[in-house]
Image (cartoon, rainbow, N blue to C red):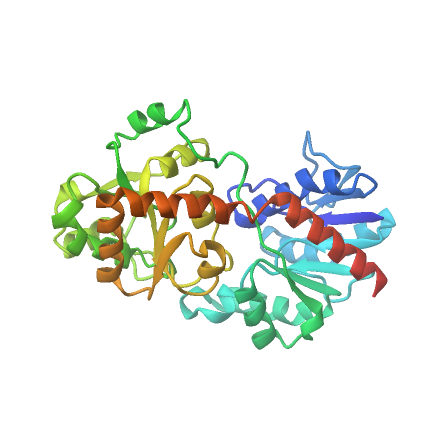
Length: 375
């Protein structure tokens, strides 16, 4: 079977779509050595794996080049390659695919969340890809929660939408590990802490994470402060609130909350391992890799029971209403002060994380390719 992969995001490993593409390319050969695959991208890149790489130059100005690539350049390349099946690993299938086509829709955030709908151009693009999704042979998504959203809002038959969970990278594992102390020193971290690691856009609900320390701070804030990791916004806005400004508004003591800014990808496993818990009160996730990465390091999750988070965390954490800062604070205090409770959840974390693997993701994705060819 010959597979053509849309590799627009190959050089964007900082994005979820880029990580997903690279993990598929790394793991598909192990589960299907006979599979021939080609990466179709807008420009040639050195050192790209695969049977061959096809560069499809942009034919239009930059603002239209991505759409031209998705709707015309990629389908034409698929025909030239003689591919049996195409995979677009993000929400942008061609409207008139010339061969069986699988598309992965990680989430419907631009459609469901008003704050993420953007200006007229973004809204027009969202409407276009929502319409073209109906032309795909199969739609893959990362969770049952996202699958329900797709069935409810895109009007595609149930049998054409399949949930295939993602996984944490193998770097995320329990410790102690040799690099942990160096990472702790690099960021000036205490021996133990509660961790928030992620973005600051409004759906991440960092305001609730900070509000937990209005209750937890007096009890554990000095010994187990909240460490907030992630690239801090340059200015405060309703869409991306500045957490430092939010902490000031809550009158949190400076020693209770530490802002360490952006962290290197290589340092993230050590950050998780050093934490008493990951605090993750997000209001919406298509999957939510940070909780799974934390679990793979043996770190319990305290967070929201919204969208796909319960599918990822299972019984390896405590999940509450996204606005229940007091309840989350109570769990954090118990985790910090009750070693037996922490040990119990840490064991559950490793058991839950073991249910996910990129090998499984690759195997189920391969099965989807085979089904698409048979349809």
